[in-house]
Amino acid sequence: MFRFTTGDRAELYGAILQAFGAANERLETALGVDDVRGRLRMIGWLDAVHDDDLQAALGKLREWQLLDVVQNHAENYRTAEEYERRNLQYSLTRRGEAAFAGVEHALAVLASTGALQTAVLEAITDRLDELYVLMGDSAASDRRVFTTLMELEGHLEALLSNTKAFNGELQRLLRAEGADLATFREVKAATVAYLQEFLVNLDQRGQAVATAVERVEHRGVSLLHARALWGAELPPTADGDPAPAWLERRRARWEGLQSWFRPTDGARARVEQLHDVARRAIVTLLQVLDRITESRRRSSSAVQDFRELARWFAAAPGEDDLHRLWSAAFGLGPARHAHLAHPDPELVPSSGSWAETPPVEVSALLRTSGRTERFTRTGKVRDIGGIKAARAERARKERAELEAAWDVLGTDGPVRLSGFRMLDHIVFDRLLDLLGRALAAAPDAGGARRAVTSDGRVEVVLRPCPDGGRAVLRTSHGQLEGPDYLVEIRSPGVIREDTG
Image 1 (cartoon, rainbow, N blue to C red):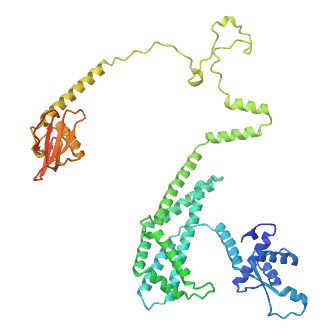
Image 2: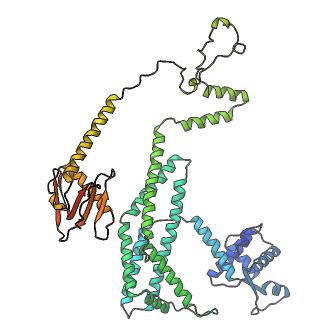
Image 3: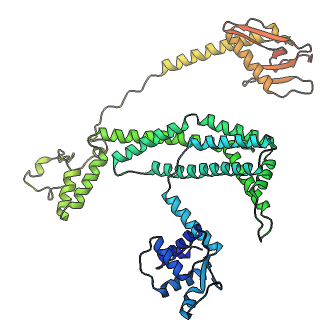
């Protein structure tokens, strides 16, 4: 379909289709050869086109099924030459119209700049409110319903296309590295201001559209489309009834409106995603602006120095100059091993050349730390006797506290949890640990929960109280209230009669 856009005669093919498109706008569906030549001049084609070339171009477009040719039997021809020139008339086929529209759309996309327009959101809300009123008025004209629905879909299409185009430009701006930092900074600053202005009250506008969509859906979307179909007054076609396809397009557009403002599948509305994209773009642009501003504050930087040095290397006249430039740029420091001497310096004359003298052993530390080896005394081993004694004392103290807590918590059979009442905070921590272990265990057939401490010395059995109740445990740090239980805390080796 788009083969006319390539090749040596691509410009002529495109101009001919443009001429037919301009004729269609004036309701002229068929053009002869002379008419095509006149239309070419009207659209600005000033190059001379021979009749054979024009006939060949028309024939090629006809071969690609972009043009159709018919004989004009309504004309009166005076000569055979006139019949030859004016007998055949050309018109665009559906493929030709689609190809020409596709090229025009591509050129329009290349020339367009996207925008985030709050006026479009307000227009969508107004059209939805108008549809809600028209749906409630049985005397309203179906044609008015149709035109309002078309206006709503037009605003929605403008929102989608402008948003996609602007998002594409925004992402390219975030990746761009402008040569002119001043212009680059101005564009980014203006974009940040533009995004900030768009985000003002965006949530309220999106919610207003969602509310308007819900109101229209309450009246019935199917009824809306049916009345719009009656008002559309679709003409009959040879392919069959156009109503099903028309209604399917309307349902698809309405689903697109729902996905943007009021999704039915529980997904996140796209207008909220647009909000996130704009906020992330603002943050990214501000970070880039900060980097540009920071780079301007510094009179020089390592990046600029290396770029300038690269230009010097590129402009060096010869290889010797390159070596001298390298030595000047990266060999400015003296050799750190030049002060080293041989073990017996008297054996090496001072007047000898470095290339002829024996090598000097150089320490590997010179490369990493800039120093040679220095052998010193071994560091003293730290006495850890005090640390071990302190740790042992702390362990004995903790063990004594644990034994005292078990002595206090040990029960001679089941007791109610509420019977503990006031406890020391350390004992209270041990009791909470035991209760937590028991509650984490699964109950047995009798409803009892059993658990053992990690060292296996203490066993706790927890049973629910027959009469329920609440237990309040108090410590010096506060109180704990919860369900009352029958608690039995004992050593696993002690055998008691099970009262549960």
